[in-house]
Image 1 (cartoon, rainbow, N blue to C red):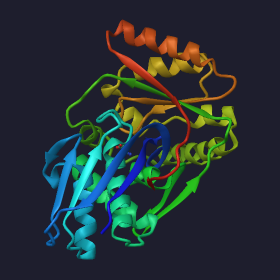
Image 2 (cartoon, protein in one colour):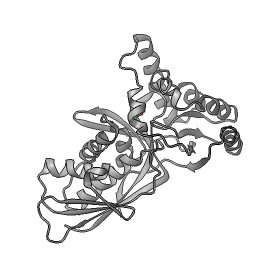
Image 3 (cartoon, rainbow, N blue to C red):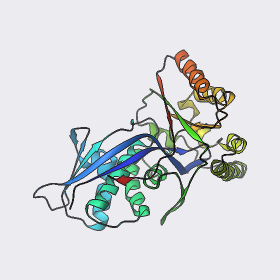
Image 4 (tube, protein in one colour):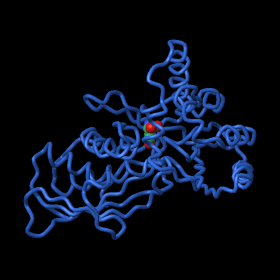
Amino acid sequence: MKECTAVSFSSSANLGPGFDTMAIAHTAFHDRVRVSAIAGAGHGEIEVECDGIPGDADSNTAGRAARALYSELGLRDGIRITIEKGIPEGLGMGSSGSSAAAAVKAIDSSLDLGLSREDLVKFATEGEAASSGTPHSDNVAASIFGGLAFLVSTEPMKIHKFDIAKSLGILLIIPAIKMKHKTRVAREAVPKTITMGEHIVGSRRLSLLLQGLQSGDREIIRENMQDDIVERSRMHMFPFYEEIKKRSLENGAVGVSVSGAGPSIIEFTDMLTDTGKVVSGVSEIFESLQTKVSFSRCKTAGGAYVE
Ligand code: HSE
């Protein structure tokens, strides 16, 4: 095997109506994952080191994703996975999914496995499942494919990648709020059943939002980047969200939603957005809550790649 390093980007899932269905990769943050041989090992050993701290392979998503890949393909080469985390963890920007995506991408290249991108998403999803309680492939799909990744099916894994309009920028609002087992808790809050009426509204919004993101039509995005099912069920976790959304839209943001399972928020911007005003409006709100917040202005990212 040869030593390989892969890079993959942060992402925001859901974008309002697309729960567990789509996510967009962004250039805000990235993880770098190196795989190398463990000298003398050949029984499928997997060691993981994250930011200089050695850990158990099962203690993070990258190790678990590697384990899933190893067990399905019956691989024997002993490997060390070294993770440099660039994506803040637990803030809803696909951090765990990105490490898993970069790990499988690096292993694929290191061992010349020739896996498809769908296979990589499948193995990375198995890593994600262990950390959040239930499998969801949206973040890993975005990190592997780049752009706006839309899940066509999960068995078999099939993904369609869309490019969003060049006129759209991304603003990430990142509050310094850590919640224990946040994704697990957020997923438990999601209703198990919905009414036919809610399904109809949700379907309309998702279809139109997808069209709006591709065309850059700000009215279509604004009207349809909304969700009364999953986002609403989680509102008790993000009491600041409604006010931030309202203020940002008043200042010209194109569309606003919780980023994945939060607490970060993703906003689309365009030439009509006064981004400086959006940032100061949001900063005022968090100041009044005595909560630190940071921002990232970024663009859509490409998929995971080997350096
Ligand atoms: N679609 C997932 C959720 C993303 O909202 O639970 C989690 O990062």
